[in-house]
Length: 237
Image (tube, rainbow, N blue to C red; front, side, top):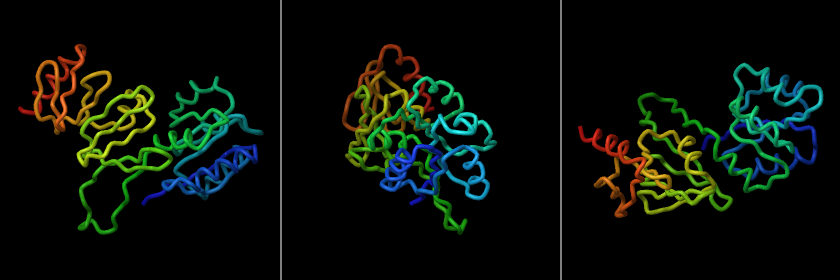
């Protein structure tokens, strides 16, 4: 399994220790180090490339967002702060998530779920297999791998979604539907209703008002009907 190397940039020792403990408990993450300010982090990154920054905003010497702006090719960033008013500026800098202190392990894992995990490289090109995209999703404090091509449909449960798969397994994870759709970025997934996404290549039948998939009949929202019809008819051409 590929692990994402993580650097903590945090001036509060207890907060840094807590983050380190969370990282060490998470299978897809690897603790790379911790720095107490942005200047120290700049020096660290010169010789130690990392995949993820857990970055506090209020740092001595150089503020967290100012430090982030100095990086020409920044890694993935999860902000950690006690101040909510910086959320908009953080997202303008393409941060992955914004953890508002104090936060627990469950909220931490929800942020980790949004990180991009690269596919492992294979040393012998002759042995390389076609890329099969997948994501790890947090369910009950464990990371569950879901291959994109195993997704049948996704059902909204308000603050959570339920992922129905071809294996019969279902995964419930903390995402709003629009957020999940943007996170996965899979062109095979089609929004048919505000509460449902379906895998286009697994639709068995459809009408103007419903889609049949995996033995289930799912409604098509009135505002989605034209787009759904166009997308599914286009697959048959």
